[in-house]
Image 1: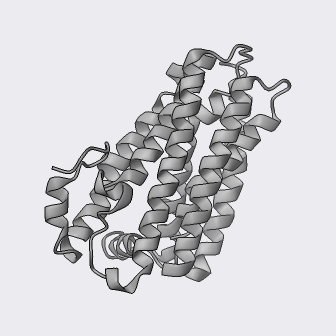
Image 2 (image 1 turned 120 degrees about the vertical axis):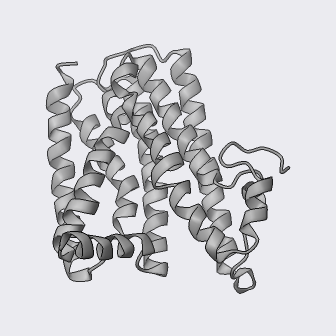
Amino acid sequence: MTEALPILLTNVIVTGVCFTALWLISIPLKDPSYVDSWWGLGVVVLAWSTYVQLDDPSPHATALLFLASAWGLRLGVYLLWRWRNHGHDRRYAKLAARAQKKHGLNFAMFSLLWVFAPQLVLQMIMSLPAQLGQIPRAETFGILATIGLWLAIFGIIYEAIADAQLAHFKSLSENKDKVMDRGLWRYSRHPNYFGELCCWWGIWAIALDAGVGLWSLPGPLLITFLLTRVSGAPTTEPHLQRTRPEYEAYKKRTSAFIPLPPK
């Protein structure tokens, strides 16, 4: 993997410049919420930064570039649209208040140390399959890669449908303070996260087929941990339980991630 080091170093510099620019923009806005959109768009930048450094891209590299771009552009544009329509994210506002109260950090330092710098590191790790999987010159697109390709495509489409259904539900005034339990949300409380996990485990399967499965494994493990234990369900469900009277009953009858018939 020695040939991967210069490529990864270049990617760190590229994404570091992007995150620095985004951090500087957040200071006059007093709002870092739009960084969520860069979670997807930044992966597109990393995938392309890797691809253009290759002398002879393999079929694995082309597939990973396509999947990472499709996932990142779809999610990034959606989250940017959501930020433009709904404004500041309550989670970042609470974190900023806590950082100022407990650590005496002004907004600029909070935004740098608590938001942009950690997300840069997490994004580099999470996207390792889309970066490292491009580098080996594997000529044969094997069965694992084929399975991974279709699993990732399924995940991207599934996540997009779930997000579209939720956005439409929230756009209707009669659904204010109601629980979304229709469409894909009838079978899973977090179908969008389920789709995202399918996408990234599929991308990892392609990297595994290319011969860098062990080196890139931290990527899907990290996104699984984040969505199930940190920034996904653990941050959304407590808020919904406080603000949606019907959510407790919905939670009892509906699977958390894997789509299953309601109990």
